[in-house]
Length: 192
Image 1 (tube, rainbow, N blue to C red):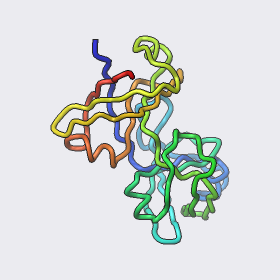
Image 2: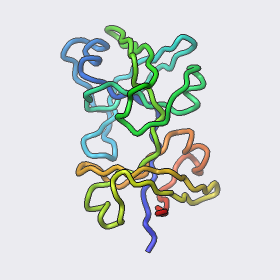
Image 3: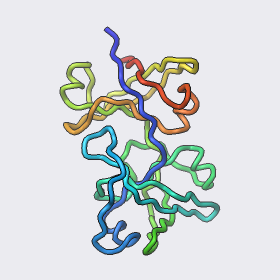
Image 4: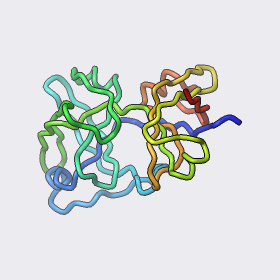
């Protein structure tokens, strides 16, 4: 039996701490939900900010909610080149020894000392889905896409949480390079 997974392309975005949200939008500010995302409790907010480095900036960077303990920005390699910064590929949440930048909102700025990454491609799943598919937290698998630009993604890390629903997350560079029309409904999980 083939183990298939929904493929989702994750565009550049920012997760903010409440402290940084307050500095950018005003004390006690609450994000306004634009739309729910596929992972339970996660949403794209209406708010956007500007990210600045010494050489360039990205305007209209979407903020995802809810707020987090630490601020983190997830970009693609194309964005890193535009900003002229070297970014590590990391699992979300692992931001030690990563570059920072200036974040600009309507009410203020934040000098972010660390927290900008290229998100490591990963599969979200809940414990029941992981058990059914024989997947373990932290395990690395490959995912074969289908269509005119079929590729196999290697070194895909499994992330398990009770709030997760099964999906394979890649960034816009990976999606544009491998998926027809930038979307693909399913991929096949290949265990090593």
